[in-house]
Length: 340
View: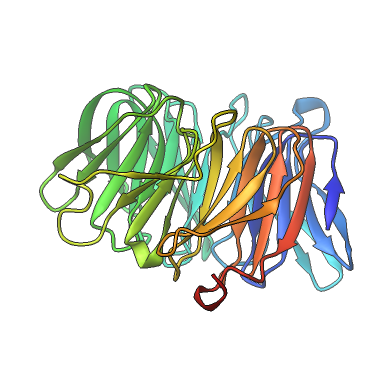
């Protein structure tokens, strides 16, 4: 299926039921349905008009979006009914980053220098964690108990349910703009404005310097049960080894799918398999099995830069969107080990 939404695709995601949802720059959320799509008016109107960030709701039903209208909205299909529930509002602020944990039921979102935390099981629950600088990314650890907030000079770690606390600060000079916890919770990786990654082993705070990128790293994804981390930011997908107690420390990355005339700008990983999917700034998408090295083209047509990629739980379907508003859902029959 191919969709033309005429708005920047902020996020293309699968919910727990395997339905694709798209958060768009016009403030709507679109869900695939009966070979087409249905539309939820999540943001917009006189106060704003764009969905700036999105994640899957902790329940696995529908998407949570943050907008330039200061609203956090849960959009979903309930049977045949489209529902948009306002979860929070911070007037006069842009909600640029959201994260959710199915393990703990917590939702986090940024509003300038603050991180707000909600609990889907308790409408009265609210935590607000203040920072000295603007928060530029948030992520929950695998258990959903601890929250990482990135900004200038490092990453602050908060316990998501504790009201009065001082964060543990993982310091590193520079601007940190993206975050990913390893699936085993042992490592935290930050994408930086300075075209590099920085990581920490959380057991002892040991630093990991991961550089050499020619461009900003807009996307990171673990695969192969957390043994590998794939990133954008180069002419191919850059893959770091994370198996063992030391992760990538003392090891080198591999670059796959090298292209002289384009950059990889988005990546997605299959949780259980050594398979990475990469989207390029020329609109093309490919998949690679990292054991065999075989590459399969999934979208050969050129177009605008891919702005979002995700795969469903078993890696059989791919959702994608680009900067011009084109989007789609692809069956990926050859992604399993036996077919590569």
